[in-house]
Length: 384
Image (tube, rainbow, N blue to C red; front, top):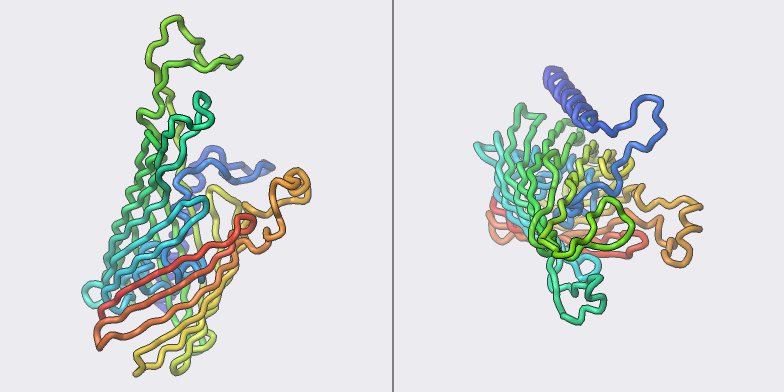
């Protein structure tokens, strides 16, 4: 009972902390205010929400409740002390419009599972895109530009008791957009409480991601001499002899997320395991969402091969269009696949190369609604 009491107190403390953070935003509606409590369209560094690893993408953010591998670095650092050994992985996802997303990590338990440590890196962007401007609408100059968004993470975790662990990840974020750039720092905090119900594992996770500073771009791309024309009184008129000037970019917040996940092994016998998972997400840049997933795993104790199948669905309020919005969109937007947004499927294989080395390959397929589908691939190596 003492373990459960301490775990409950820690969970309540996390909830109170999260509430205090959200309340710091002076634009949050008060009681009786009918405005939507959403910062949709006001955040930068959206690549921080793309996930890590095909296994986690296929199961959804609820994966934070059962994360016990290197992908804990992204979903819940509290899972690091629960790992069986050192693990390294790299994942890639070709994104839309010739963009790409890559995530990699290295993690390990320390002191026999009392602590956990890891490093991670992610990159999103594209290169050599044609630069179109008002002065050169056809890109006759053949100028190009690049976009590169990068995250570097350092994670640490501690198992406070045999059923409760907590951890954090410090992030450095770099956003390079053409000839401008910005940097920010962020913090992830995660907890994991795991026990048994009716003789089978049950786990709960509380995670806050991307608490940090905002991004404010600067650089040569904001310099200009030719003052734009028009009737905008906020823009200075063009002088007779133009002198160099510079636009001042506004600051953009990064997407803070609060997640609650729950998992339960409805089957846990012999070589088979079937886990059901549920999640609730509160995002600063979107309305609240929820979802569920499942993972079936087959892992013979003495066999060299293990396999798994996964799937999940998460409600995506940003792509849930009302009837009026569908009519206004007309033929400019196909809404036939709108309800498919948030559906993910996947699977994986693991092979033991001797007694201490494992290699794992995972795949995930995700539907992005009106945008279409994309695939993620992961290769991981583990030392036990």
